[in-house]
Amino acid sequence: MKPLEPALWAPWAWVDGRWQQQVLLPIQPDGHWGAITSGVVQPPEGTRVLQGALLPSLVDAHSHAFQRAMAGLAEVREHAGDDDFWSWREAMYGTALALDPVSLRRIATRLYRELLLGGYTQVVEFHYLHHAPDGQPYDDELAMAWALAEAAQEVGIGLTLLPTLYAHRGFDEPGLRPEQRRFATDADWVWRAQQRLQAAGLPLVNAGVALHSLRAAHEADIHALLAHVGDTECPIHIHVAEQTREVDDCVRRHGQRPIEWLSSHVPLDARWQLVHATHALPHEIEAVATSGAGVVLCPSTEANLGDGFTDVPGWLEAGVPLSLGSDSQVGREWREELRWLEYGQRLRHRRRNVCAAPGSQPSTGARLFEAMRAGSGPTAGFAGWGLRPGARADALLLDLATADLDSLPCEQWLDALVFASAGPLWSGVWVAGRQRD
Picture 1 (spheres, rainbow, N blue to C red):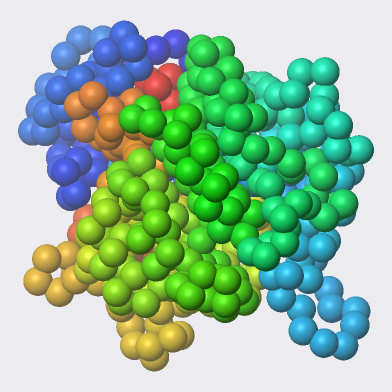
Picture 2 (tube, rainbow, N blue to C red; picture 1 turned 180 degrees about the vertical axis):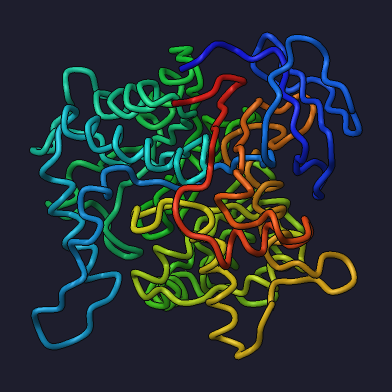
């Protein structure tokens, strides 16, 4: 990790949703951006002069770091019958039961380095792998969480830890299955964990809370946790409507679809992030938009698990804050996630540039990137994100020649970056004003 930079100057930078030229970006002593100015022909003395185009990084808003250990190992079907999320989940349990804090730190360290290369500088860990393999607490019940924090600090990436409430095996099934024993928590445990993690004051580490899902956290569990959270400004995440079976089970139990039930039984607000929201109908999208909650999309994982396509144009048109997650770690860069978002819609609708907005933002790559940039901050509990005053000074330096973009108009750079570029393209990555190696 290099020293804090006093200021950066870039010939091009993505500011306020467009490419601007000759941009000066001062960095405050706390590692946040100061006032950003374009059209600065002569950089002040002491400024780091960059070559290329400066982009905001994105937040990886949904990560299960331990699942990096099984990425690529669940792509074989040895028996007749369907292979879907639920069969994949059985393989995931086997991985979860095999890890300890030492191995988790090793896996997470490797993953977080990959995510930095993939253009993420903050990771939101939806963390439910808590206890020892026999289900008993470690001497320090947060041993697995500290392992993740240590990995993030070694790499130099930001980390938001979400200790997760996981109490039940299904909508009508209280208690956990034996293979879920490492996940067992209640509202008191989760809040105690969040308070300890937040109070630790580790650099670039903060904490929120999560509810695993409506099948694993029942109504009483949800309200018990919300009673602890109160008006605290911390992010609240939940998996919701990822698979059609989950939707069907929720309708049988509650008479409502998952997002319908959440919208009518829980006071959703801007702190809430609905992860996946794959199977959402127009009236559910409208309800989420009205609440101010955000949605975290994980397209490479949703494709890998056969979950289905969400209505990306619907979420965009409704103005719902969106972000991206690497989830099961089969994809670890945001360019791939954006490509999957658009290509999924093209396959679904048999049309091109489905996520573009003629008249306001005709570039598909730019519209998707800016939507995910704008939605990144709230997922990690930050008021703002990107190249903007007061946001943390995180950035990616794009080598235009290496990316084969130098012959294209700047309006097409993000399109080419997302849909027609390969290989590592960042010649520099900054986190909190310091360049990472």
